[in-house]
Image (cartoon, rainbow, N blue to C red; front, side, top):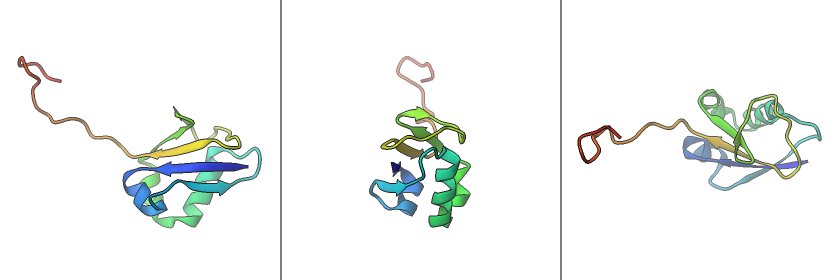
Length: 92
């Protein structure tokens, strides 16, 4: 089966700035994809534990089974807002 990987921020720099297509055996899980990616892109390893992973727009766990044609997104940690006060004196 074929899955598409899209990555953002540092993960995108490591994988390349375009969607990546990978072939995996039918019945593969997200953990199998992780092993394949870390084998092919070792620089991704220190970042992996900090990433959120989404499959077809839904956050996923490593035991999630993948399906042919699914999209896997590697999402970086998000830091929050401006730290300033909203108009009217309240916090955002």
